[in-house]
Length: 133
Image 1 (spheres, rainbow, N blue to C red):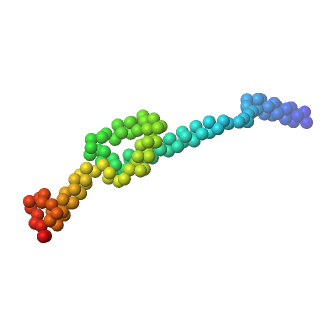
Image 2 (image 1 turned 90 degrees about the vertical axis):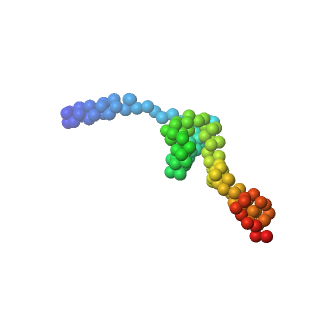
Image 3 (image 1 turned 180 degrees about the vertical axis):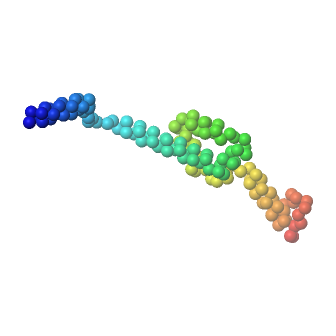
């Protein structure tokens, strides 16, 4: 029985020596600013991810490459933007109409309008059209 008591005493001593290194948890109040700051930081990282996901789309990447933009440089520039700039860029991406900066489409649209008005006899811009009047 003596050996058993000695063995139990050694086990208790070993267990107590391992618990001496543990730290107690302390509860405290968290300031509203800290929570709001964490939420703003999470929203900023979400917007940055949205902008990078838009950049990774095949049609966007193809259009940027066609205009001479290096994709690695574009990613680096997005990474260097401030949170306010990323928010503004994400809002612009979400609210901009599709194809709004397409100059070629605008020129073709104006050409078609002038062509139709020439055919209807309202204008005489193109010499190759005949008026219906």
